[in-house]
Image 1 (cartoon, rainbow, N blue to C red):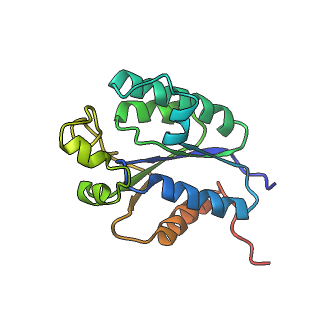
Image 2: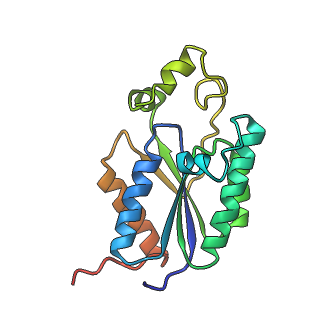
Length: 182
């Protein structure tokens, strides 16, 4: 494993914007560089670490608080943490920035219509029909980052181009080693 500083690459955006897709692709690229990397994903974490929580604002904040604790431990021990969470509230994302080592906010942005068209679970349709309360972007707010470190428009560029932009940004700041072409 290569030595590198720990950091938290926090993917935030609406459901269906492409957070998990990007995080998985970035994780694969980092593993080819033999980096220490852990991916934390909203759906997976909800099945284990935070299964006792609902979707009220208080529960969403508690969910992010728990994930932040894990990210803090990993990042301070020189692990690259890729966290893919809607994390709709600016104040909570500011807490993450303060609590973790080398926090990088990645705004994964796509219009609501695009996110809804990607929704294989049918959650947007249910939320728009009033069947799901507190659904972010429909009947609960999403506070878009005002100054993200990276702004990725998944409706305007392919995944591989977005991944390259992220890796280049990290390389330029000395957080990841360059890919060697041996």
